[in-house]
Length: 270
Image 1: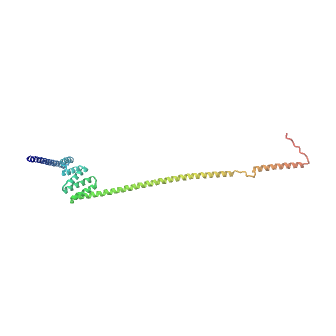
Image 2: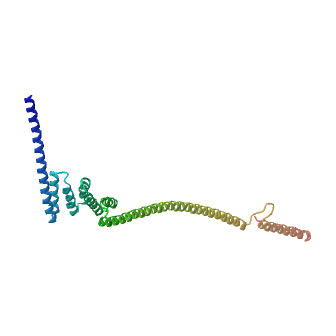
Image 3: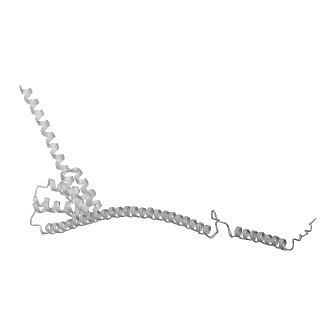
């Protein structure tokens, strides 16, 4: 029985010593974290923000839940214009802080970092969260008003740009439609002009053909044509000359018979 009690006592002492050592280690880490925090603060006050950031990160390495170290790291990053990297540090502080004023300051700085990045909607949300924790902060209220005004302007500009884009797309569509219509009208006009030209050419050909036909007809009319059953002037002239000759011969013969019955000796032409 005594042996069992002795063993239990040893086990209890063993666990107690481990817990004491763990507490000592935790206290040592916290002390080291606070020391690094102070070093960071000294560098920050000297405006050596990059070196201060390194010290704060080392402090968080000793104690990841060290709210002051994360908040001050956010400030050092902010001063170096690393706004995007600063926001998670402020968010960590806002989540771990136990008092409302610290939360309000963290949200206020988140709003400032968002404003620097022209992210006005997240800035408005952050300032509102800050005022929920500290409604009497006039600086945060002023920043909220500025952020809200810039957000409204951004929304209006986006709306105007969208309307302008829609109008431009509509104008472009109408231009394309009008262009297609104009091209169609030009094509129709071109086809009509071609048809008219072809028709004029055809009419001109018919006109020339009629003119040629008329000229040929007039030309034929200008030439005397022998009429069927009628003699030409030349034939009539020849006939009259033949009749005159016959009449002369008859008259000469009759005169010869009247001249006392004398015969006329005709000379032979051989």
